[in-house]
Image 1 (cartoon, rainbow, N blue to C red):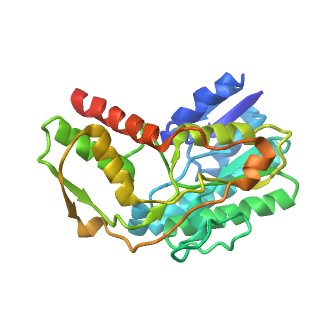
Image 2 (image 1 turned 120 degrees about the vertical axis):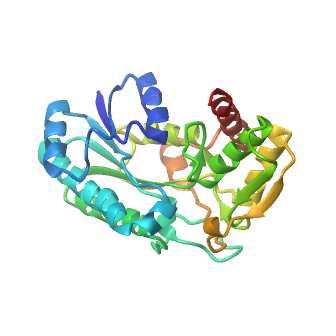
Length: 298
């Protein structure tokens, strides 16, 4: 069985490929060389590869970057998804199509609200989230036309290889620089009171691997831990693991309003048996140690 991964050179793609190979998938990973905004190129790629499954990871994935360029985010995340779905329906209509949406599509919940399940209304609050919500709805439309589409809504996940435009790897990189004496003992952070549902990237790719199994019903699935953590807890955990003391200063450029987002993953657990396995402290240790090595080598 052959699987095509778009965005295969990105953070999640680099973890997903070896996980799928362990299940004996033949993995064809495409990254920048496959422009998802080029409908013709996508059709040619699918005709050449003839995949049995497609995992659509290619995206502009940063909320901050989407605020700077909503147009580019829409072109990549929505139009790219449209072109790929249309090409799949035309060229490989029997392929399972795993569309990676985002927990961001639900927007923010009120304080002390329960976790979002898949029936919650989509109330995206950023250009990134709106582009993903639009792609999510589009994928559902193609499913209604007969395409074998699984929509997955992962909540925050982190691990080695994640770019520091996101909060957790930004914290880890700064702490690693302090540990190596390459930065003064001062951290620049945004809003530490926002609550997020964090997963290890290895748990996330395990979920994707299970959702590619044909016995799993098509539909929409959250991938989440069900546990909310303040970003301040993430920072404290990284500092504790590193054994580093540092002043913490708020950078106005990094600050966004306080919000709350936690997911309910009961549906994927019932369908596949998936639950998160990696302890949160282990996730933070892996993230920090990877940055420690990168900073040492720089």
